[in-house]
Length: 483
Image (cartoon, rainbow, N blue to C red; front, top):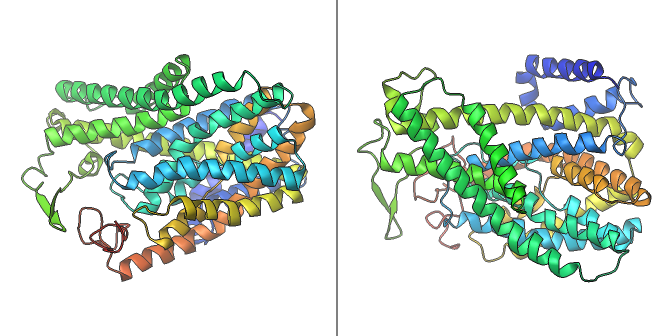
């Protein structure tokens, strides 16, 4: 398989998607299903144009999937504008914490029983399949920084947090396999370094790097009135530096990159609070919901900038922030889509030769039993309705993140006897998720948003919902029964 073959396939697919965009949007399936079908068609069992062996190409696959995940994590964090103390974060933390841990344990037991994997190999597979994917979950993630729907927000926050939170358990399983399946003196150091230090350190490092670099960049651009500064370079620099600093300090780079996106968004929010956009000044006022004062937030800065910004307007920090964030989001979304196309096509190419019916059964157990029941149990007591908890449980999409963990495991000590079983299980599970979740995402979310509009949903600021936003039916103002 040459680079020209890959360029031909990807170029042809991109051309097709660009010319049929309007038609594709009307289809009741996700675009990932189309990419998967193209991969099968050009693969060995289709036209035989492309072929790929994941085990032999594991180093290349680890690099590409790692890039895809960190770009998606940064962009996902940049879209989350809700303050960290907001109740919406509670569901995200529970999904990325207790729900994921329970899913890992249950998936490991199911893998041992259904696939006959040894204990640590089953635990490794459980850790690979448990996290919700930040790339393919974009269909159920927040649409933009003004989207405060609790289901979308929780799934977005989970996708950003649990890729890094699952990593310690991937390492734990690999250490156990290297130790011959025996627990020993390595458990203590693993827990201290990979959990107690690496998880919080990654979050803190990323958040403060994103926050302070963001404030610095906004102030510099505003002072210099720089309308042509390359925001894509700044995004890449922040992603790279945050990831490297975290890894050098033995923290989790994935968590750091996601936290950098959140920190950068907080920098934008602080800037516009200190120096509001000229069109907003005088309109930021206090509202009252259930007797408590609630500050009406400044709109996201990127929604207030035009395509052509003058040097004079750039002296306003809110305008400089809006230009920077807008360009970063545009660049990130484009890079994310390109990497998604390539990697889902890879899954399609390898699907038929890697398909496993036992793994397909395991996938269905994970999608229909383990994930939903874990979410319903662990989200009890949060400010969400039963229907919202059901949606969060259903949309635990598996994808590029699982491919990265698979490639990482293949490069870090998985025995040849376990490698083929892991590849078959992960490729099958990802393909099943693309199809099952891709078919249901549009109709299910349409029904959900229609139900919110019928109930006259309100968001967390107590404002009446419009038909153009995703209102939050779980807010106290909308649902006195919750909260």
